[in-house]
Every structure is written in structure tokens, then in C-alpha cells.
Image (cartoon, rainbow, N blue to C red):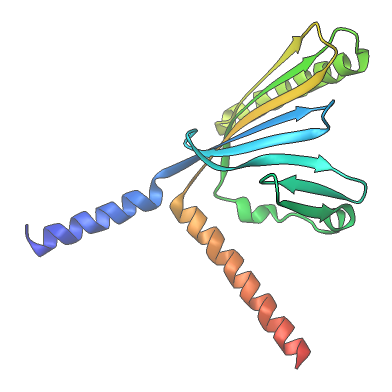
Amino acid sequence: MSELMMCALSVAGVLLLLFLPIVVSIDCHFDLSARRLFFGARLYGRLLLAGGYVQPRKQEVAIHLSEKKALLLPYGQMIASRPNFKLLHGIRVTSVCGVVETGPVSVAALMFAAVLRSASSAAGAILKEKGCRIRNDVLISETDRFLITLRGNVRSDILHILILISKLALEAFFKWIEKKKSIT
């Protein structure tokens, strides 16, 4: 093979890799009786990236990624910090599926499920034009429990993720420089 052919194949391979779509499936399961939100993130629906559960406490929220370790986020810190949604520019939500399971005796839970179903139908009609599918179902079980299960698919590509990582690294570097200047 000539050098020109190898160079062309290398460039084509790099471009294919940069624009190859990455799909992450996010599963959430909220159990009211256990007061826990279980979650999992999978790459292409197969490879587990992260999983665990979130549990509220008196002063903070505990995010358990394993049985022995938890990340504690104080409520005050969560309220004071604002998320920067501009960083998520290249990431698209492609589908959201939800199931609300409730018992027949809880009128408030039935009303909440009905409102959630109506809101998701309205959002689904709007977001269908942007390529996002939304589906929501309500199950009435014989047991008196309240469960919400959500599954969402998020799509991006390696180029956008590299841009996001470089933006975050530059912001952290500039904050470090500002902190260094203020100390001296």
C-alpha cells in the first residue's frame, strides 16, 4: 500500500471515530417506600458505566456508588450552585420512557400519575419534532406502593465530548490561575 493510501485511510478512520455516535442509556427507579432513587448508566445499553442509589438525609443527599463509599452533597451547596446547561450543547436526549406504578387506594398517587402522563404527552408532542420520543405508562397494582421507573437514551459523539472536556479543563485552569493570583 502506498503512503498516500495509508494517509487517506488514517484520516478516514480518525474522522469516523470522531463522529461515531455514542449512546448512553440511563435507567432510574424511584421507590417511595425505600426512599431511594436507584440509577444506572450503560454505554450502548450493554457496558455498565456507573450505578448506585441516591438517598436523602437530614442535612445532605448521599449518592452511593458502592456499598462502602458515598458522595455527600449538602442541600445548601446544591441550591447555591447553578448548573451550566451551555456545556451540554452537543448532547441530545433521543428517548424517554416512564412507568408509574401505584396501588388502587392512593388517590394522591393516582392524581400524580395522571398529571405526569398528561405532561409527558404534551412534551412528547413538542419534542417529537426534535427527534425525541417520549412514552409514559401508568400501572395500577394490587399492592399499596408507589414506584417510578424511567429510561432515557442520550446521544453524542466523541468530538463533542472532547470539546466538553477541554472546556472544563480550561475553566478549571483559569480558576486555578485566579486563585493563585489572589493568594500572592
